[in-house]
Length: 213
Image (cartoon, rainbow, N blue to C red; front, side):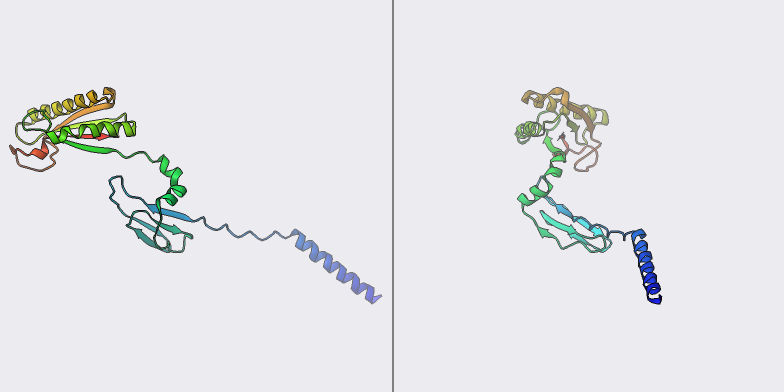
């Protein structure tokens, strides 16, 4: 009789433990591992290279060389050392993102002979490059800003700067750029490339700046 009672008690305890295990909440799953983040430093369109610093709770790394990459695997572990990556691999990993980046604007400076709206021979040779930039970017926004040196008064310099901008506009239109895409303005002598005193003839200030976006 005692043996049967003992067996019954054990069976009851086993049933209670089984029921307890059945009702207990399962342990929470571990957090998913952090996806690796890659940071790449690309050269500018003119070939120059800036720098970036990648920082997290574990430390930081600075990239100063073009086409180098830093990997970050965990938020509390310092970024890995920069490593070089070839252009093909960069395109494979980042091609979709790079395709979304707008083409950077390009700037041209054209210079004028003293006192008028005649471009120098060197600046005339740059005009086809402006047309090429417009075609490459399919540009609908070309800004032309006229400037003068400090000879003359502010009113005459403003008018001369605008006349230079308009003359440049006409030459670009003659090359085939749609006139509705071109916007002109004048800064006169208020935005000097080379700071001078009044009434100073400075060739580098007699200019227009053309920005193709």
